[in-house]
Length: 407
Length: 140
Image (cartoon, rainbow over all chains, first blue to last red; front, side, top):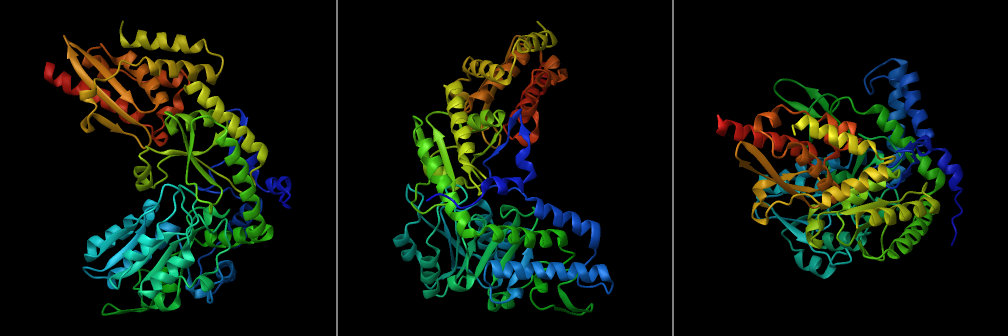
């Protein structure tokens, strides 16, 4: 089915797509690392600093009230985007890494020696290391849900790992290195059966799949604005109210308190308990604007078009002799991780850059996946709704050119 | 030949190329002709870890001059190493310590010198100089 999206009109929203790199028009295929920013979001950022920059939640003056209103409106936009039942279940964070660390730190109060935390074999380092640190502090044990060659989690093994010792199951919704969409409904249901909480790293899923945290019944969900056409340095943590109430605060400071004396401090209610200090106000407001932009196009139309791009690019790349694609699950987002026989991914990436094509090369902060495949890294092309089939053609011929130069 | 003269030779060679593609094709060829490190020296101790490509370097003193051999798992990185080794190998440690690497900029490979490039090149230059410092101390 052909897309109904007007891609040329959409591309006109993104000023950066007009630039040249190394003399060629930019082909930006590193969307899984960060997405580009539409003019509508850039305008919101400029407007904030031009019209109502002020500190929030504490000023009686007009600018402070306007900024507070805009920031809290953004929280509601995020709430609706992920269909949380309450706005205060959405915490502003600096991004997914920060979100995960809030939970990992808080869980120090809930896990003890001998408890188990399950983590999938295809996690980003940011969803491995905080849990290892938690295990070091608490004596809990980290166990790994294995995957197969296609990059799919082995669900039978997962079920066998679950026990009443399992306190938490952490997993990405979509793998950043492979694009696999994990069977999160089943993971959540099975985990809850043994009383374990579930945290999903949604950084790679939120830009491509409609997420309903209530329908999923997930305990924690995270996302980063900069993968959703928003700015860097801002993201969100969704937590069920009952969890966020129990979880101790992560950082102390202003904003997160109710009353401070030198003898004792009582903490503010949700969400402020977790939002110490002056937050990234402009970033939060721009995050909201970015979600407005995504909504104006529609996640369903985005997913459908990106799937078209994925199918087209996969077919074209597979025509290249010696290519191996890593992550061949039927259920995946528009990410293609690949290598060409005997060529180091860094070499391909370097030559593609000379031809104006931006891809990611390396281990994608997921070294355990690279170890699993016994490779130093991959070339990763990740597509967004503003990419075109013509760009994929340019990308594929550039890969062929690079291959020819390197052999 | 001293280091400066060799660097000038390299600059002259690269100035013959019209575009990046010729430069890179030449570099890839140089990479293929790199004086390879003996397998026994390809140890974890000798590896310079960049973020993406691995580089191994070994140094040996021959008379009063330092001889480098190296390898990398990425061919473009090997090409750059080949250029560096051509400039610095078979030179006195003192001259290596004092040499600068501005010629990399002049042959249009500046981007590879950026620390954010994470290809281990910056660490590699540092490593060549560290070897030189170590052997210089030995010679003193």
